Amino acid sequence: MKEVVAGLIKKNNKLLIARRTFPPELNGKWEFPGGKIERNETPQQGLEREILEEFNMRVCAKGNFISILHEHARGPINLLFYWAEWIAGDPVLIDHDMFVWVDIGDLNQYEFAPADSIVAQKLQTVSG
Image (cartoon, rainbow, N blue to C red):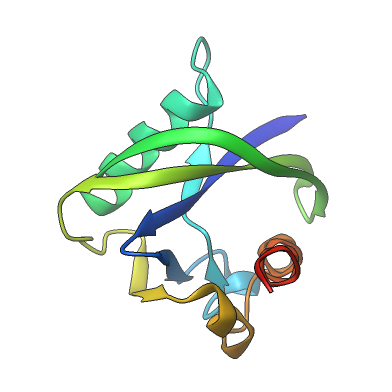
């Protein structure tokens, strides 16, 4: 099963979310950014590398918030959501067409990809 890591990246008490452009079924949906974990890489290392590659931004990955098994069209995925702190850099869009730093209480104003939607709801329950 493929493992993917996503970041709940905090800066000034806001979380980074980004809007996807692909695959077609997720075009226009919002997500907590991240990507595939490479061989011999911890989820935290994978998250830090992916954010640097996709946003040219440095983060420090912390602890796991939640893991979700998701049935994707291309097979099952284990999505690992980790807290992370912003260290440096302003997001540069490479694989997304938009980003925003958002208050947890405002997450319900965005249409998330299915697995990310579960996390957004959970975050609002925990923080509210």
